[in-house]
Amino acid sequence: MRSELFSADNLEKESAQPGLRLQNSKLLKAELNGEFMARVGSMVAYQGEVRFEALGSGGIGKFLKQKLTGEGVPLMRVRGRGDVFLAENASDVHLIDLDGGDALSINGANVLAFDSTLKYDIKMVGGAGMMSNSGLFNCVFSGQGRIAVTTKGTPVVLTVDQPTYVDPQAAICWSAGLQTGYHRADQMGLGTLLGRTTGERFTMSFAGQGFVVVQPSEEPPGGLAGAAGGQQQSSGGILGGIFD
Image (tube, rainbow, N blue to C red; front, top):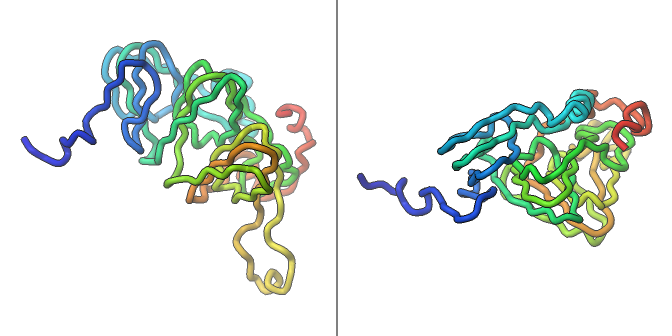
């Protein structure tokens, strides 16, 4: 049997070391000898002796935060020995290695899988003092290990060494040590009064030293802000103390 389908580019990639690796730009391969965490429903194939255990959001504390905020990652623990392939709606998959001193703030919708050595929590985004069309909460990962994230299209990684502004719906993840804020993009004027706007109600600002990953797509609203329909609310309210 002959076909371009069977070219070397499409054959399963093998490695001598277990862990999360790219099979191709759309597929993650986990060479499993132990366990890792993955988004529920992301498995597309597996070989070997593998078990899947649903975890919700990863503990009662994260479950409650997810219910309050709409943010979080519906998780399953994957255990055993074998090869597991994961994907998310043919999105591009990227690998990020965290060292012990690193922390990454990421939209939970873009988390595909991560090493079980990593810790994560749901945190309020700093400077988000009003509701917008984006979420006010993100997942913050820390520790040492590898995480696989997804983007809609090829992203750009911006080095934050000067004031940087991003559409909140296009910001995938950023260095957790950056200072963030929200700014109204449209300026009130004659155009606004006539119904003409830029279509960019808010931008998210980043300052400090680090990076922000921006995808070429604007995701629908998520988190508590999306559910609130744009109502204003102070980040220092009832929820503020829970997520500080």
